[in-house]
Length: 125
Length: 199
Image (cartoon, rainbow over all chains, first blue to last red; front, side, top):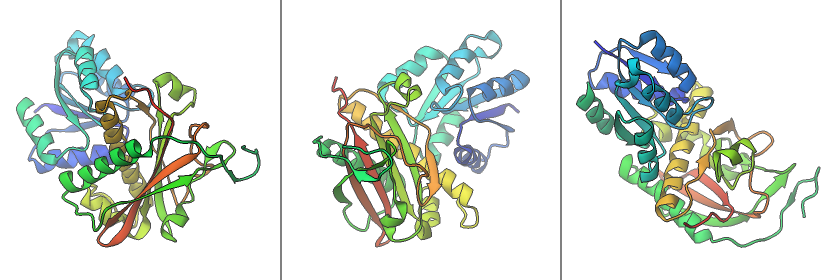
């Protein structure tokens, strides 16, 4: 069963996302990272097992945009579906994210309902 | 006039409070009522106030908002990531949540981990709420044709932000919105913004 990587600098937000994943019935192992740098480390150690990345945009050290851009450049992980979960909800930002990672599989603006997250995960996993 | 080492009120200057207040009010109401099905007990109150500055930072005075303890979170707006690095903000938003209603309010917003026994978690939830409200507000400004702003990570603290909050030094006014839930004053949001380019 593929792992899900949740990248968000807010521990509360990560917990909230994991809680929604669990309540939706997914038993996939969930990995966590607090910024883009940590996410790269986690992905490097688990790249063959990760089937979905849920990623915030605004984070310290390395932003979500920089992270998904870096992911897109590495063939071994470039095809992992990435979903942005972020307060950056303008059309301009969505297009910026799509340009940074052509494999962007979804974009969930905050605040979001649990149903929206469930639907998105369901369509990917 | 600002005098270093003393606490005083900065002088007056106009900005369009309607854009800020109505946009922010709409974002918060939409988030509470549409997303989380929370009914406001009455229309939000709006008040224009003077910024109290000390050592070039805006003071928060959280204890005065509810005549009692509260949780405070603050986020700054910048014209670009470079301005963020240079600590040169165009605005600031400060959110105060009454302490005795905080857990009820946060749980109603889906923050299931909020726990009266754990202040750190409550503060994290308040920071995330500030992030959501600020993000919605800036997205709404962008959709109205204003420049897309960069936002900082939230600062959060009990009662007051120690040392105050960065703000745009050319601004002298802040706008304060008060929200009532369960017939109680639950959340106060202060915002100050310098003019932002309309594209």
